[in-house]
Amino acid sequence: MAGTTVREYGAFAPQEEEVVAHAMSLDSALGLEGGLRLVPAAGEGKGRGLLASKAFEQGFVIFKDDPIAALHQNKDECWACERCLKVMGSASDRESWLARRSDSGEAGGSGSSSSKPDRAPRPVPCRGGCAELYCSEACESHAWGAYHRLICPAGGEIVGDPMQSAAYWMREFNEHADETNDIFRLAARVYAMVVASVVPKGGDAEADGSLLSLHLRSVRHAWKLPWWEQVALPHDVDDETEFRAQLKDLAKDSFDLLSGALRLRLPPSVEESGLLDGGFDLYGRLVGMFELNNLEIFHSAEAELGPVEGTAFYPLHSCMNHSCDPNVVMMFCDDDDEEGANGDPEAESYRCYAYATRDIGEGEEVTCSYLDQDQLQLSTEERQDLLRDYGFRCRCKRCE
Image (cartoon, rainbow, N blue to C red; front, side):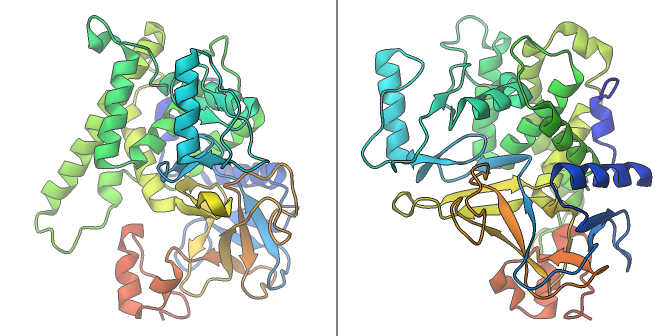
């Protein structure tokens, strides 16, 4: 992606030939075997969508999808890998491990508590020294090379002018996100991924090039409006202009904190080169993209440890249009669930599977519901109201 700038990732409407080329790369990389087609226009006034290239029977797994980025949201209940959300123990296991690591002054811990499942992976700490932990050296290496090296909040005790410490800026950023909108954390991760792709690589920037390239193309071609423009106006808000200005200010505060860290971690020549021009526009669109396209994660994992809960952006799921009468349902399965990953040792804890809820004919659009099962039982007008954030009025068979 030589010559690419941050501004190009914020482009709202890629050319049709770019979408088609991206569809072909998805088909090859995700092993769809010609079963699905990504089209720029799915008909009936819709934008891009997924069409079935062959017939699927009810109950068939049409595709499996791994997210570009995932955010663990119940760290107080469960311990999971920062990158892939694979379960590593309970929250108390994590605290005990970190305490032992701190007491010993070593990079790793010694053993695990008895409450951890026997097959739980041994934690791998972030090489930068922050509190993030990974399920394997491969996950830690990919995360560090792809994005974490730019947003790691580690840095030891801050002395002197804190404004000259990247760690200070990242800690302020994380605190701001925790107090306002945790999606900022996810947006920062993908923004860092984009920035890392357009600037010269550091000596320890290790990441799976083919996977990272696919993720970056998916971000580039995703439907994304600025967060403050995309959010539907709440019914109890009278002044729309002020409401949207407040959201934009909130996003700008978040971006300024993130930029403070990046300026100190990137060579001065990068900012002077113009590669990062348009950064705030892209950041605002990433927040909007996540708010619009994210799939909520609820993975049962080890029963005694509680479920993993989070949110993530999935490349194929984000290409599907909504229907109140969907023919696909997205589900999370244990790695050894015969109806899910079929014992696939490569399956991630946050991998999701698209099951056909009924027979799907060749050429039929593959759709999912943006609403949960309870919301689908509401009246047509109530469902339409919930869909306002997505900027369309559903015209499926149930709604017409």
